[in-house]
Length: 344
Ligand SMILES: [Zn+2]
Image 1: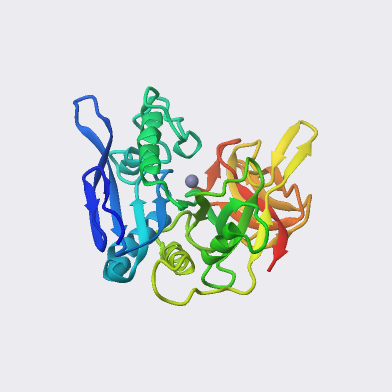
Image 2: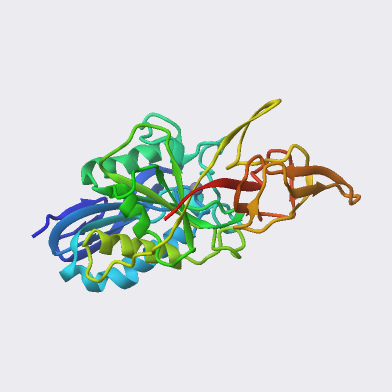
């Protein structure tokens, strides 16, 4: 038998599901800021899986997919489930709550400059600004739970793009590489975006599933199906739930490149404009492009092209700007382009 798990007001013994809230701050009237938590505790011992969604409070598909799994699929499997899952479906809860006009915001409106990016400030600081304190409370959960696997959900709302699995570059056949491949359940649906900065971590295994709502999704979209399917397949891979793991034969691996420009450095993963105006992409997601190829244009109010956006590398288009018809200089990336590395 497994152990009893308790986080905030949620509690679940072996074979049970628990839901509740964790207090992560207070508003100026003393009202608590509470983050939801769902515990799925399998009857049998096994891997411990921690999931964070909505660290950026407007990136929905991961949260929708994980909630679908946790509320509609997994509750019926608890008797045969090995190990447990702790899901924080809306980590950046005040950003998720957003503004009075509806919808979430990327960063929390509770920080006066709204500049604190939750994903980049872990493990946080209980004496810091609201989002730093939030990160501290989230990481208290991590420390108490001590997970074997940590899945994070992202997907930039401002772009159309190819869904991807983001993780640290790992040798073929390694535990991390195998887990990352289990996130992909349909050929071509997701690519593998690997990076090699930082020290390798053996435990917990960490992957980030990122959805822009599919190829034709408008920005982030509301469809979390690929995120749900990837999560359930990871659980099959880890033998947490019954069922044969779906194995996709060939998956495209890609990587961003830093490119030296005469005036500075550019990343192929975050191509910005230096002019403002109406933006049009001349290429589609998954198109192959050449270094120097004009991939988009910015036009002024009078229909004149004020900037040609060129690809800095030979690569494949991962995403294109879709938040609005217009954009200011450096306001957001207009393209993410990556080099194809492996296809296996
Ligand atoms: Zn994000």
